[in-house]
Figure: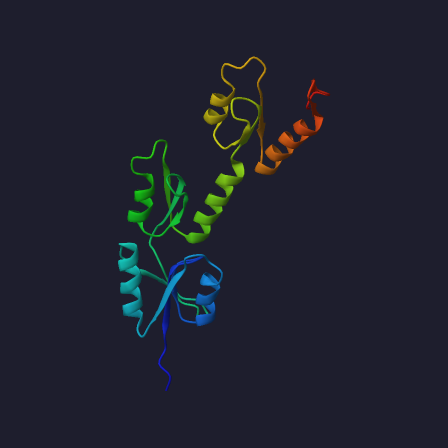
Length: 187
């Protein structure tokens, strides 16, 4: 009889322990720097993942399609830090925020809620198109954009709701600009 294997995805689209290789493969396929390994027992798999994360994983989530994976008690979301993202180990999340100015870290009870919060946070961010400034470009932080226009006589900076809108604002300016100045005002 064939012995069951447990597939641990250490680094991939979603970290965890999977019973089916096809489920684990979806998490690592085309993921740069992915790391995974199979184990003969669930205990070995849990220990390996726990050691990798530097924390103990204890909650088991079972699904009817036999896609079993281990889930952390809390999911940590780093909104502002060295590497914003979703972490299942508090140690890894705290490494991203300790000593980082303006760091923002929150805990959630489920991966789905954490993912939704992460997505919504980055959707709500404003982008700043510095069209005429010390270093024209697109900036995520208002403070950076302000620094690029401070002290200039006629700076142009626009607050945009998305990165694409900021790019469009700059492109609109460039198409309306001639060597003699601006043909028409940007609206």
